[in-house]
Image (cartoon, one colour):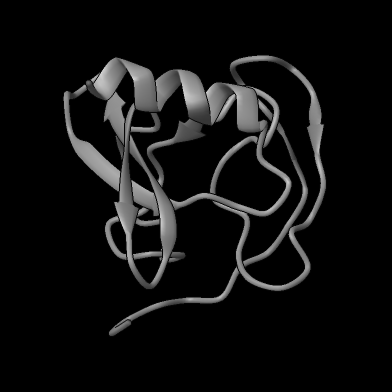
Length: 102
């Protein structure tokens, strides 16, 4: 992906308060426990977005190459963002999102 900045760091989730570990094989983008993210990037990893709102998971797409892709909507500015699901994401929450799509 053009302009992709690799940042894989642990963080405390603003939504559920849990410590989120590094992903280890790619860049951690969202909490694996509640699937929420934070609106901090314009381009992946650039940390240039000033909004910093809560990116709430609102749906799932299935991509033939990427697998599950989580759709987020920023609760502050309304922006829509997408990110590939991680191997350690809560599968029950992903299933619930897929049911909401239908």
